[in-house]
Length: 324
Image 1 (cartoon, rainbow, N blue to C red):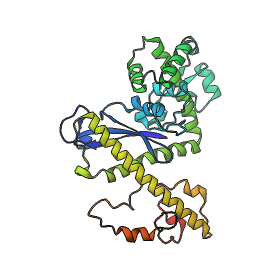
Image 2 (cartoon, one colour; image 1 turned 90 degrees about the horizontal axis):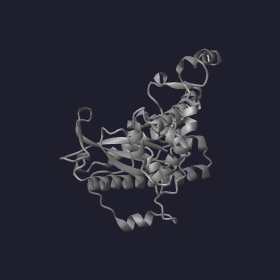
Image 3 (cartoon, one colour; image 1 turned 180 degrees about the horizontal axis):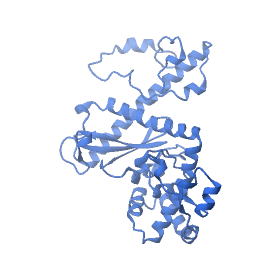
């Protein structure tokens, strides 16, 4: 799964709005969590200049769906050492794409000379000494903190925000960041050495971008702007957009399935490897504007025995299907 924020223009005054020149005026941010099937299961309105990393774990741990959530991809905005530590402590995996990866601090468990000798290429990047004694001293408290998050005793956004702002005089905050640095080092080593791992993360993030494009296409009323000043009303509008987006995704997915079954029944080769790259997050088949007159009886007469509309004629080549 992935999570990312999307800016929407706002008309009027609101406590969630900030004026951002880069986005052309007053905006707010809708932070969404998206599953591997392109379905959105978490939506939260946040101040656009707030650190997105504080909200990554909220809907990941507190969602009410049956989705088996384990791995969460995000971009640089969703990454902090606190997040790396907490994801691992609650039994989840955080594989982000980090900008300027070669500039981050990575840890070592030997002297600089021994580290460079063992790892001649990566050794110079391993500049921080691993403080195992600190982790041992604070391990019980780290597990208690993770338990509070996992069982809903505290919201993740509150915990991440408080610990991210804590000073280095706070022993537990230092231990949490130390554990996060260890997890970030392991992630960076795998990211730099495994091309398949990098492509997997990129594909996940591309799903989020395709959903953002679909959101913009569907959110055309009031010229795509949010007009409600209250947070509760803005949240309702964001969730309405989520429901509409999920409806389009579900409809497109169902008809993709029918089309694939029909192609295979006709003897066409439709490999699963190709289907893994086909996205239902597009809107070419959606009529957004105008008055639509429907002859209900004529349309019902077109439905097959299962209640489905007829498919369009098959294309000459499977490669002609829209692929992301």
